[in-house]
Amino acid sequence: MGLIPVFPSLTFPNHYSIVTGLYPAHHGIINNHFLDPKTGEFFHMASHEPKWWLGEPLWETVVNHGLKAATYFWPGSEVQKGSWDCPEKLCMKYNAFVAFEDRVDTVLSYFDLPSSEIPVFMTLYFEDPDHQGHHVGPDDPEITEAVARIDRMIGRLIDGLEKRGIFEDVTIIMVGDHGMVGTCDKKLIFLDDLAPWIEIPAEWVWSYSPLLAIHPPPGLAASDVVAKMNEGLESGKVENGKCLKVYLKEELPSRLHYAASDRIPPIIGLIEESFKVEQKRSKRKECGGSHGYDNAIFSMRSIFIGHGPQFGRGKKVPSFENVEIYNLVTSILSIHGAPNNGSSAFPVSILLPRQ
Image: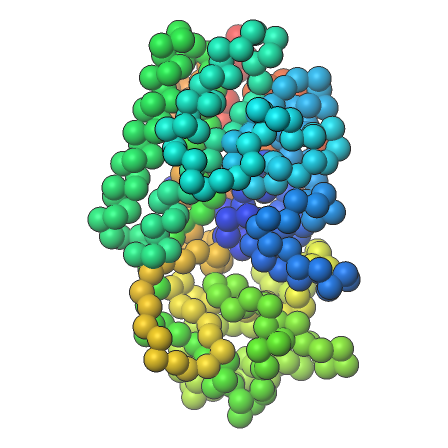
């Protein structure tokens, strides 16, 4: 079980897939950081220009229907695009230092507005336990405490709704963007070890782990680079070589939906769970956690919990991809959504019939 992230199972691509119903190749956020080969410009987590963020996120869809939306620290929500202008007091600019309690209390305060002013759609974001997971891995007691803290925040939200007498009338959808797996130094693959077959200079590499992305220079056939790299990796002479498989992006498994964008570099390497790719050997020691691997790996899955008038109590549903959530929300709100990669039949399979 578990909610299936899109590939790559990284934070920004998945947050934006959840709110657009699009795979990263279609919504444009193909990694947490990347270079646009057409313009030479670099995308990072504070890039708020609309040109990066394609598709139509839920807050824009809601506003298009003359309704109000509020966002609290959701990637992409600060981008002023289409009918969404990131209104003051309803669109919070990201600040990791804002206490979780304050975030919850702000969302609760929206329910105290005059009925015509209450947003029909709200987002709420917490960094934990992802923040701790990168430092200590997924199995450390620190993670247990982080999860318990989020549990207390959800309890604070529910208490606030109950005090207002509206808990049973509000739909809450709780999701994670990805899972987490432990990583340690013994599980490393070094590109310099491929030198007998082909040299891969650092300037070709746009991302090392857990998604290897390579952009060879013009005039060098990407297919030749892939062939030589795989020859070395499969030779048995490269440490952990069998744990990396390199593809032309158009030859990646189609289930990954990771080819139809010029922003995706021509060569993509799929790394086995827990392994990391680095350029060269060093004495640096590290043990922590990571995500971004093939979304078919179970440890990359996350949670989906729905509560509200249209969710059956105690019902369990089979695992599904997070691109289905956009249509689920528009169905609950009875509004017409933008074209997306989700299934129009999905909401019918998970929601109760309308009374």
